[in-house]
Length: 333
Ligand SMILES: [Zn+2]
Image (cartoon, rainbow, N blue to C red; front, side, top):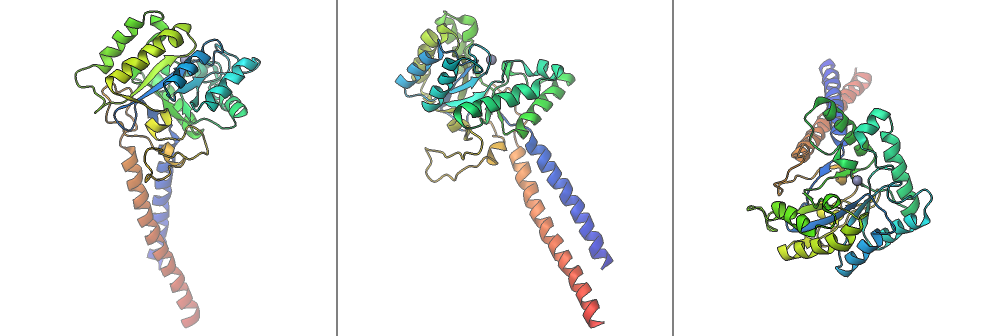
């Protein structure tokens, strides 16, 4: 009997440790930099909306029937606090079926924001303003400059990255990085230079739509990007044989909190709920690895879940034995 109680306590402690480790593991926002399936290509635009240029990008995307993702700021090129055209632009992006993600409120890099104590407000206020405009909270987040998504080496930056990823994870976010950079902000009018730069990544010897997928970084706030670079990139990517997909289709995660993801191309696939979106993807098809610190954790989590179920069964068995013993003593002695 004493042994039973002792074993019960031991199992409870082990169980608490397992639950704590699962909670800690799930806390961190997963980092994505490519798609689940090869052959897919995603266009992402940062720093908007810019009423003068974003509409041109939307027109081109509509002509090619492409769904893109816009990582927006509240105050940057546009102003979601007081400019009705900026607000309308966000509504239009959403209504035309593109995904909307957060790029922070003021486009402040999060390392600086941590030091100033403004990280939380930059993230939370952006979530709220998106929710106010389109009625849903986003699950996609791109940190300004990529800080918080890179695999850092310096201890101080590793610590800040952990802090950012944990905060974003606990607020329903996935961190979206990229594995091809058009450098549109730098090359401006020089479309040839953009294609030359893409060639280095997309025409590398071991790279093809059979094995690779890409999330591309662009900025819809520059006239040169929306007028010249975007149309050229679309033609270039199509010629290589990639299929344009939305970011949600690419990583198989719903773009909005509280809304289930459904894979439109796979009727037999089950619905993925938001809990699943906190389980990181295991990226195997990219040669431009920015971050792989989440790889393999899915099998680890499922293993300890299974282990936990076994512990529960033993625990219930022991508990029943104890009650049976008490019952016997009370009525049969
Ligand atoms: Zn940016």
